[in-house]
Length: 294
Image 1 (cartoon, rainbow, N blue to C red):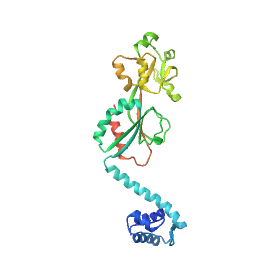
Image 2: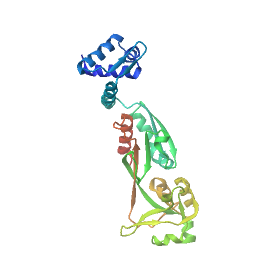
Image 3: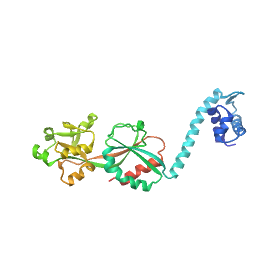
Image 4: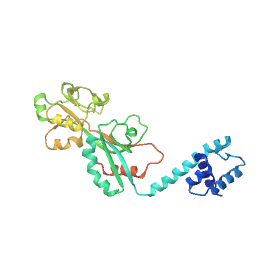
């Protein structure tokens, strides 16, 4: 008699509190469950269940045995699920959290192509301003711009973006153009609201040394598109990813400040839960971004 069937039958009886409900759960006859459990007890030489006309409950040794085999059964079912999922086409709802600016300019232009490639996956994209807890929000994947601090989630870099300092011609005409990082302290800097880390810029000096710039100007706003609009309006200097400001630079609506500084590139990160098995729909989405983000 199959040992695995014996284990499943015994666990079902304990879980359901009786042979009748265990048989219904397994989709077999009550006598079949009873034979599996009897064979298990005979093979082990131990009584695992207390039987009465009203209820069935595990003995002391049965409780200990149940705790051990429950983990074995769970691992076996998980292994089956992994193999089946890896061979199946990605399917189902995929909930994605993404910073609003990145979603509008980089993610949404790729959605049609992803949908064509994986027609059985439905995307539920929630825009945010960063810092949201993906587990609490129920997201399968969270897209963020790095660097990332301590995190218990799995993380994969799927792209990069270049950070640039930009300001309008009018602002420069009135306030002058800074020649060094130190000159920025005399200018209006448009910062992002939120954590203290967002209220400072990380730049690299001409010799590659990291420099932190803290000098909040007249405007603080937690939206990159709004920061770009403010820079175009002459309210100060903004520090923005190139996917936000490249068009404005190309149209000469803003100019780059300190363009000779070393280029600072930050990663685009895809985060997901650190489970033993990553569902195929999540793997497909992250692989797609890694292959399609410039």
